[in-house]
Every structure is written in structure tokens, then in C-alpha cells.
Image (cartoon, rainbow, N blue to C red; front, top):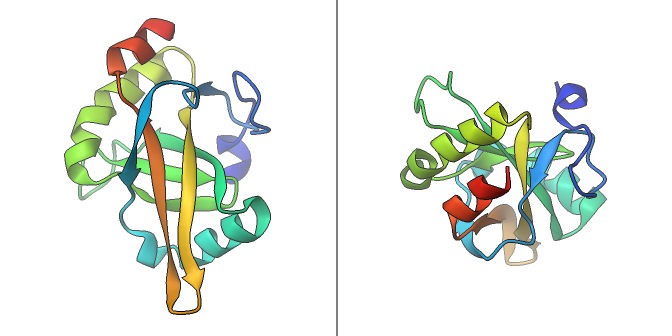
Length: 138
């Protein structure tokens, strides 16, 4: 599945996925949830990409728990989800990104933890502050 997901990035990033690059837009940091189930992928991301990397937001409309689910990926796999209260806002934006011909949205991401005293690894992503500005650029 990862081979299909990661393709050509719109503007750099070294990804194999056709993504819209939102890394340079004004943004804010947002938590990722579900990381406790994806420690192996987070460890692989930390080992391969370091603490700061390009994350990809991808819609998962067929998610049995949340029809607005937004997955967070790295080149090492699925890392978690946007929290439900943010996914409801971002689902229609990512639907528009997909309709514009992109498979996901490239964003800045950071890993925290994974060290002595804090062995579990977590992740945060930088979400664009202005959805309208993002949509206008599609």
C-alpha cells in the first residue's frame, strides 16, 4: 500500500505520492492520536527521517469509527489520526485536495518522546491556519 501512497510531491519533499505541499503556509501545531498503536512505524520514522519530517494527511472516509477520519502518514507508514474534533474540519478540505488531483496534503511533522524517561513516541503535525488560502491555491 505504501508504494501506491507515496509518489511525486508537488514541490519537492522527496515523496513518491502526488501531494499538495502546504508546508510553507501559516500554520499551527496539532496533536495526533492513536500513536500508541503505531510505535513501530514511529520508531522507523524516527530512525529514517529524524524528529522533523514531512507528514502526509490522507482521508479515510470508510473508517468504521469516524467517517471524517484523517490519517497521518510518513514514508514509514501510518502514524495515527487527527483528533476527531479536527478531522471534522479537515475532511472536506482533504476531499477538495483529492478532487484537485492530489492524494494527500504534505505538512510539517515532529516526533517527541522515545528517550530515557519517556519511551513512548508521539507525533504532532503543523496544520495550515487558513483553509481558504489553501483551497485557493489548489
